[in-house]
Amino acid sequence: MTEAHEHVEGGLYAARQKIYPREIAGRYQSLRVYAVWALLGLYYLLPWVRWEGRQAVLFDLPARKFHVFALTLWPQDFYFLTWLLVIAALSLFFFTALAGRLFCGYACPQTVWTEVFLWMERWVEGSRSQQMKLAKSPWTKPKLLRRGAKQFLWIAFALWTGFTFVGYFTPITELAGKIAGLSTGPWETFWVLFYGGATYVNAGFMREQVCKYMCPYARFQSAMFDRDTLIITYDERRGEPRGARRKGADHRGQGLGDCVDCTLCVQVCPTGIDIRKGLQYECIACAACIDACDEVMGKVGYPKGLIRYDTQNGLDGRPRHVARPRTLGYAALLALLAAGFGYAITHRNVVGVDVLRDRNALYRERGAGLIENVYNVKILNKDAAPHEFVITASGIAGIEIDYGTAMVAVGPGEVKSVPVRIRVPRAELHGGADIEVSIRTADASALEASGKARFLAPTH
Amino acid sequence: MRDAGGEYAGRMRWPRLGQDVAIVAWSSFLVASVAAMVCFAFLDPLLVGNDDYPPPAFSSRMTGYAVGFFFFWLVAALSSLLTLYLVRTARSDHSDRGAEEGTRGPE
Image 1 (tube, helix red, strand yellow):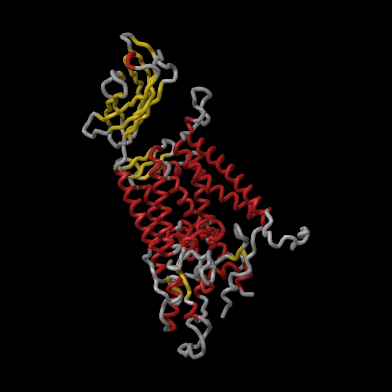
Image 2 (tube, each protein chain N blue to C red; image 1 turned 90 degrees about the vertical axis):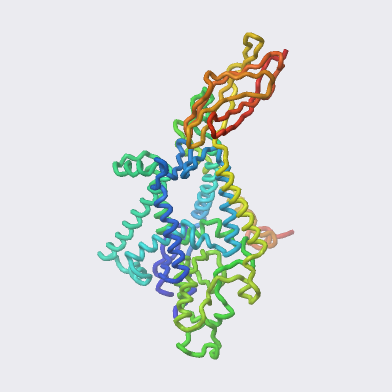
């Protein structure tokens, strides 16, 4: 039994021993730190950015409008979100085929927030061995103080995270005022606590268990791997048989490989696996073992890269094909979709029209041999500027339209319902016919849209 | 030199019931989130049941979203539960029929 066996924790899903990843510096760990700063910086600062007098990024659910800088997205623009999700999924395929679980190691919110919680834990409780010692020590005053300080930092950070999350859905400056005055509504309170609580539990306690037990991607990512995917691997042919040796000894002569069996690769692993046993689905590709091993190899004077990013073919001594039909195909498709998305979102129609028949009357006979139908025409102005619209109708000879005024003014981001009477000479029509109602802006923008409707007339 | 493999060995698992509840709740939560998002992109909760009479089904959009989400969660959880039940109760391997105790072997 090793010392670690004595503090088995009741984990949240599987009873587990708490994993104390050893701190490690190196090029991949620096990359991860930059990723944490970039992603979390974006997350925490974005809601505070202003754009033309309003919050730049605001998903206004009660008003059913999403603001993203100059864009205002309506429920009708839902397909853009679908498109974006397709691009996201394809990116995941592409990067997984290229270099394995890059997303898990560098960009997944679970990894990123866990990393920050680990920093706070280390800052308060010290290094890996100090943390393990503290965990075993009785509840003395210093332990109480350190544990209390850690919890305080974690909870404060988690609450700020929850507050920021809700700040994407409700104006964040107002929300800050409400929180300061303790007057948040029930939904806001619930979501701040829910998201904050989820962050606290996931990043503080569940950590690698989320990846191991809850993440669907961890289970199916291997299906996207092939023999040319870059993965984090231990070079078994070079490293084995592993074993301790005296410094400067001729290990080859003693029949030993390059692995000095220092177990640092295991100690730095946030999911607690031994990479030397081969690729395992618990591996989140954080590359901490690469950094740890490179450091050791440097110290003992062996070439670096005993644990490295490599392909299965590379390990077997065959040529590597990072650019291959699969990755090139994904890349081309991805570029095409992204370009299409960029074009569509900048060229989308910012006006729209809905034509609804008045359900109370089929038709009315007017003087001078005219049949009249009444409609409710809804004009959508998704543009950032106000517009005046002219409504026209077509589809039947001699069709006339009457909506009271010459032009309908609709403000930016507004919908206006206009009661419209459409008249057709009786002689032109028996029964019913389809008509088209069009709107066009009267100004230089010349935006237009049209909708179809049914016009009803007597059958005889 | 410490036995590296043994450092984190000896993990125990939750009881089966706990695992089942967690798997069902979590996977249906994911699906319900997507379902609620797609559903309310097309459907305005304020217009549900608002056909002049009877009055609107929900007093505010946020209430409508919440009720919708929990409804989806419930439905998805029932489906997951049924799936899990069928998988858990199925005979695991047809080749060794009769090999387990209490089951009848081939005639």
